[in-house]
Length: 426
Image (cartoon, rainbow, N blue to C red):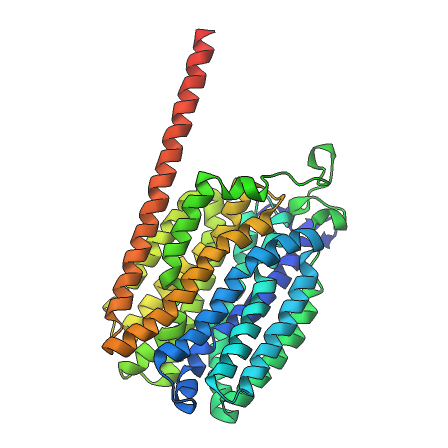
């Protein structure tokens, strides 16, 4: 790693403080959201609800926190990410606290679904977008660290929630988590600075020179980006993939309980997704900087399909743990690489807005996938059908990206060959 990217003179490069803030925001946001599996059984029991109905709480929140990126991304490009992150942390904490006071499942939909959805939605895409501006050479690595907060949150937050539920009940647990999230999240969001030039530096801690003037970030307009074949291909692949991506976060614990695995062990298995995810974000992000981020992203789609196939045949704790680790690894790499690939392809001019529009594909998939899996279970008393559907969706996503990348390589070689022929002719 280039030491200039770590230090500027005797000081630590401020970009790493921005990464730390983004890491904390994603940890608190998604860590809180992924505690849902620990609350699944108490909610189903106390409100006498079906799995499909309870799953819809998570689906609504997921739809909002990914779908809202289409608004929060462009807004962050205009007004900055810090304000949106602070508002998001306030809404997130308030939504969790109000969920603890809910008197019906409908009120849980409104409190958790809307509060958590809006809170994560206003903060997630802006903090990812701002990290992209602070780095060039180490963009994949820095992005991987930022989103590894999601993996760490998945490791630590569900066990904390389970412990709190056992000690004080699910209602007070939600209130305590909400207060913790708001306090820490607001404090760390204050560290966010929207552009390295505001701190007198260029990306990676390099000095600003004529060749590195950042006054006018370069890149495609939003209209140009979303009409490009590369964006359309990526959108379609993410949409199909997302039908299954978040099914484990809602249903892995209930699935484990159905197979006789104790609650405490089931929650630890869910945490194994976080362990794998953290490894994927840290190590695969940095590896992709060397191997190529686009090819690495293709491998993430294929890996998630493989992992879902493992889950479909798993009935014991060690098998589910293996699935969780493998799935987390590729899921984490997928999340880490998407923003970096967008920045590589379309530049920094509207990076948050483009990421936000891309994530609407994830929003629609999240709205349908977990709730559909729950209703399918209610009808068949089995998760076989939704798991097979998840595998198929990921396989198709892999094929879409592979065909698109191959076509681009062929066109690139053709243009290169034509240019060589013209030079020879001259």
